[in-house]
Length: 179
Image (cartoon, rainbow, N blue to C red; front, side, top):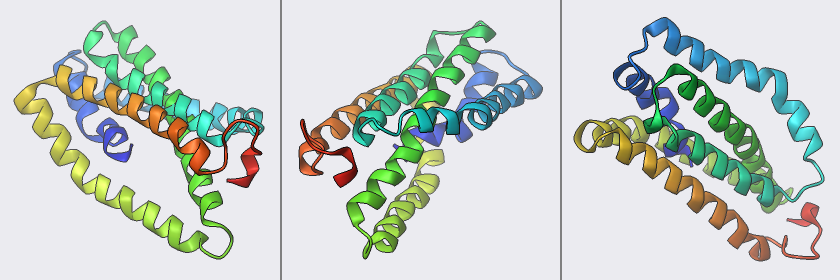
């Protein structure tokens, strides 16, 4: 998830410049749109989704994150980059905070620090791997493969979340808070 998501900070600006012909200011505005949407809507959205199983929310978030990034080769025009940003931002808002909830609830009170530490280490590794991997794929294989791969990763995240439901105690008829 993190390697795919971190393409937003590394390859997305390159693609918006190369593929969409956008100037730095326009690229900054698109990335600012992500921040504005998160600040204005994330807490409201998460509050409304509190009663839904976290793995369901994460599955939808994974699909939305992947779908938004996979939309990128379909543009320009600029409106397509804006629409794609809105879709992957929604996925980000659903997936990232809920994934921490899933990890922390799985750990239990006595192991939360260890589980969260390991979870954050995976993000640190992804932060190192993502720029190298993403720019390598983008340069040598092209943007269509890169963004399609992020879409496939989104599908795999969703399938993985749904497959974990019984293992984490969130299967049909289970209380979502008991994970």
